[in-house]
Amino acid sequence: MDTIEIVIETPRGSVEKYSFDQERKVFKLKKILPTGMSFPYDFGFIPDTKGEDGDPLDVVLLSEFKSFPGCYMDCRIIGVLICEQGEDGKTIRNDRYVAVPSLSTMFRDFKSVKELPEDKLDELEQFFINYNRIRGKKFKLLKIGSADKAHKMLLKQLRHAHSH
Image (tube, rainbow, N blue to C red; front, side, top):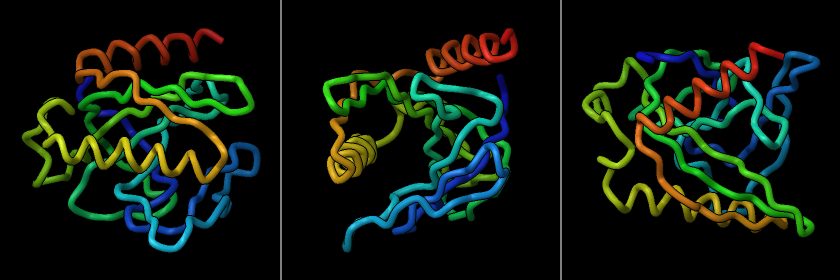
């Protein structure tokens, strides 16, 4: 799997959280983050997929540039954050794929999320912990999966989606 197309929902630096309404085919302002908190990277999804939470598969996009809601771009998946999210005593898997844009110059040489500096991975984990906490949810990073692991998980998900 060389590249995959993703759609950005919420751009890096945004204090607004947008989500794509699959039925209406528009982006909706979903929430405002508290003062001092913003999205550290672009967040989006992989079209025509569905995670355990019922939404399309989540993607964190590492890039030197910021995009905009609805931006559609080719990316390389370099890993996956294998995560659990809990609310009201119920826990579900809600993994986040990690990608870099094909057009990136700064991140073009990264082949795996495991090559990233540890502080970048900590930053992502802390963002998700805090983001979920303000929503009354628990978040736990179970494992960081390599690009190979991410590709296998994604291919399995895509086969499953196209068989239904």
